[in-house]
Length: 318
Image (cartoon, rainbow, N blue to C red):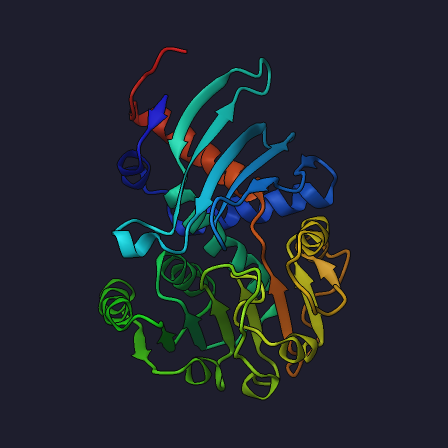
């Protein structure tokens, strides 16, 4: 089965189902029923990447690989920052059963992972969300966080004024929540209960977010590594977490993350309650989410199973 980006989007798995599948994938990881090796990559341009992301979830009976790229200069050429393909394999024979565009899946599962982290690490009464970076991830993360929390206000920032205007208009219409455009990163961080940064991933960033901007009791989820967050801001966290310690170590060895705190726990430990999440209203918490292939395979299985029921896509011979 081949599923184009349009095919995948039309199948339209609800965010709540994606969140449920991603949380289950982290539980499987905690139970040691998952294989998710660090993702190898190539880098044809400065700050551009093409990564291979394999994963296997035995109890969920899903396996495959995502071949995904991120090229920061693409928007200048009218192309999306993220592109790629995902291949699902039959777990009995190893044969590929589906090839699908991974753009929608990447956005949705990333938002879902943020929501899972926030479920355990953010204040349950969180009402305000700061979004820095108004692209696909800024959209999916708002949708995911709003699925878990009763948001009253979103503060949005983007270096591109056109992107920001479109985001405010589209997200207000889609979600019916108050979306306020701001003209500086600080205004998107100040006093927000939850902060998500979704800029491009940079090997040698010039971060701007300071510790004093971030409120006591807040939760942050950087999707762009440490591109936005100064080391002292990350070190001000009472609990610094990540979605996978092994992946974080791998990236550190590749020259990323020059100055980050010691990791308290990974999400699998927190979701499975091997480690405690938020313990009081004043804790400052952060989950450095790198993006795991178990999230992709859990989401891709939902897409594939619904596509089969709908008889969607195009059949291709091997």
